[in-house]
Amino acid sequence: MPQAQGNQDKRKTVAIIGGGPAGLMAAEVLSQAGVKVDLYDAMPSVGRKFLMAGKGGMNITHSEPSGKFLSRYGSRQAYIKPMLDAFGSEALRAWLQDLGVETFIGSSGKVFPVGMKAAPLLRAWLHRLRVNGVSFFMRHQWLGWVDGENATLRFLTPAGESTVKADAVVLALGGGSWARLGSTGAWVPMLVQQGVSVEPLQPSNCGFEVGWSEFFRNRFAGQPLKSVRASFSNSDGVEFRQLGELIVTADGVEGSLIYKTSALLREQIAATGAATIYLDLAPGKDKQFLVDRISQPRGKHSMASHLRKRIGIDGLKAGLLREVLLKDDFDDPIRLCAAIKALPVRLVAARPIDEAISCAGGVTFEALDEHLMIRAVPGVFCAGEMLDWEAPTGGYLLTACFAGGYVAGKGVLAWLRG
Image 1 (cartoon, rainbow, N blue to C red):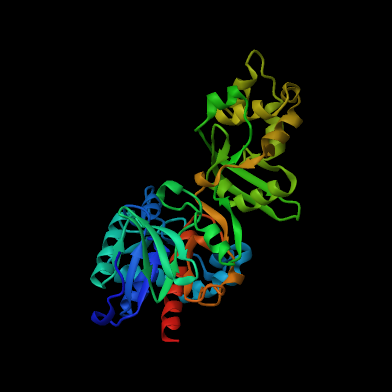
Image 2 (cartoon, rainbow, N blue to C red):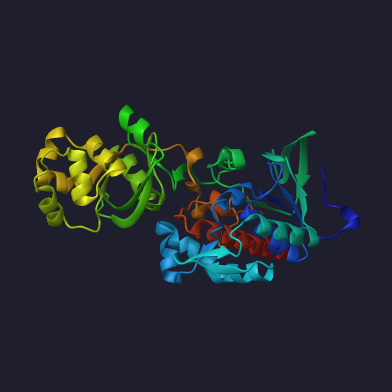
């Protein structure tokens, strides 16, 4: 295991543990300042979750105004703001351009690299880091500290256990989602043992369980439910109402509409045992219009045919009505149309954290100073998804990870000078 090179190299050495966007950005800041950086990751290569996130098109950030952008971080806005002030969306785009990666703003306001892929960006970035002297050590699983020596790190490597000393450490180990890509959450007990305040990791941007009937599950699992409006109001009166689409799964529901309100849904389930969302299956039509159309005689046509011909409800939408309503409800146009405009779907549990796109919980901001250094373990900094914040998809997750890595890198420089 490499050590600082003593008389051959008097530079300070910083160990970065975790090769996602936060860890790589900390390495960028430090290496450009002339610091010797050794980056360790348990996986065979860095940026695995980053690459996975870019499979459907690399949404790197968002172009909306700063105030609206900041609001996406909910109750953690006050802690995220200094990070975005230091390295926000515009700074991220400028940095990408300097890296040779052009970006563009999509019709939704989301920002993508030209080409839409994460791999070229990551290749260019790793090349620059290596040119700047960053050393990468793969298949190095962090095991914590040597007892009584917070400056000495323990790693499990292919050659066995080894130790490393560093002048400062940046932990960028991710949360607890997508463990197969490296974010296992195994760091939680190690930090708790050091007296660090850590909120339990929970799924975010996740699906939820409903408990469909076997018939409905076998018939409709995997199908998208398009052009619906989802509404939800929690016990405190906080409301969510948005048009979009979701996906019916074998267990329940997932997709963009569900992800955007996953924090509210998760907290409501934790408080009361369930959360009910209401789906408007015909958002372009008012209730009276539907009642008038459905009330027309259907003659020899089946109810399924009547719904399809009169108001365009068929397939999955019709299946949902059959799943939720009683048989008698279909004989009453007013009750039926009320359900079409606000169909209650009861969610009973979030899907496991390993299936989630991201997670909530982590190292509390109260445990850190303004440079993201752990107060209880001086010289050790945290960044990225292992901090206690969450945000919806749309570029907000990645932006905060980049920003946290940038702030942690600057914090390490201040620490080394101090």
